[in-house]
Length: 310
Image 1 (cartoon, one colour):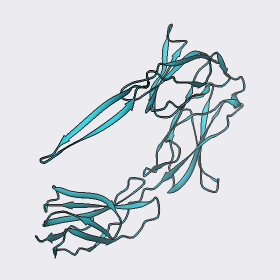
Image 2 (spheres, one colour):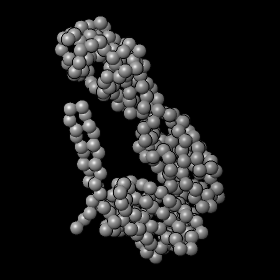
Image 3 (cartoon, helix red, strand yellow):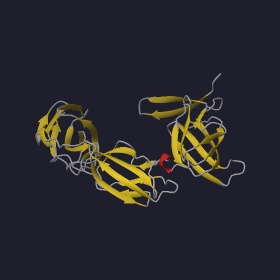
């Protein structure tokens, strides 16, 4: 029978109490199954992908890689926690042992482990550049992000290119480092890197990056009007805002009980018009801000005041 860890959180109110019960499965009787590299595998590339099967109820995995193994360790090459079931790394020619376990906040499976060997291909062109950052399909408001990748053995330099949506090269740079910066245009751009030596080059490895550096426009309040008064606690808020080309935009409302805007009564992501129940009479002050997927934000709207009478 499967065991479970029990966590109880209780909150007590003036007139009543409530409790939330959360169950999390004990993983100690389960197994983590490795997929690749398998036991005694020979990997003919320095770009190695570690993969394993999903463990039911595991929220993360602990991956470790030792050189040459965990009994006679000369170096722990990788020691990381990840949420997925695969991990990429560039390794030098050597013998290795890797292990991984599934875990949650209360338990873990036993480690599953395997030995393997990396033998570097004599053909430089068959090697692979593993990109590190930014992650693929990232959205950012930075026009000159730091591009990073893992080193390729025997590489003399790295060639970095930016391509527009028509696959035309719009910028190119070479460097002997494993990181560089280039200025990206607004919108979606591909960036790719290849390694080169004196006579050969690898294939390009490609990712996509979306840049949006423009702030949304300031919202303009339309209702309730400043100094408006009403008797009901359900208030209809409305406003206008001119859209800016770029990533998706949204609006957030901030409602306060003091003119200095320090006592927050309500905050929500809403669309115009929206009804909000403030539940109590009194005088309120409110503003709006617009945001986008690239973490840009607008100036706050003009502060407005309204009163709900008893």
